[in-house]
Length: 105
Image 1: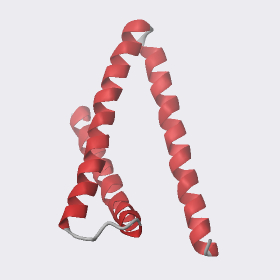
Image 2: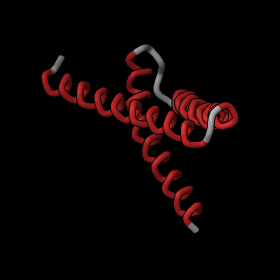
Image 3: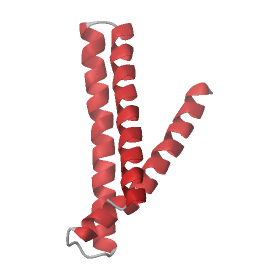
Image 4: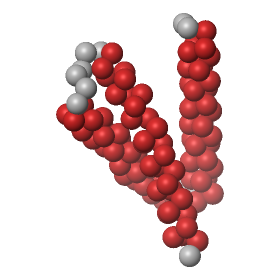
């Protein structure tokens, strides 16, 4: 039951991340000359999902190689560190972007 719950929570978190990122990506694309419309929405959705699934495949392959080469404990330590770095980067970029928006820079 725990695995079902974890997968459900993962899906909710993934949906929240993708839905919140899409308007920013669309705004950026329109500022670069793309026209708003269904084709741009499809392009953004396709790119977000492609990178999401490539990360899932690449992470599984990397995890398998690391586990075979070292052990499970080292592999989970590496992935935990990578997750920590990702969280720090996302929070930093969000805070810097908010500060720039507040100052009008």
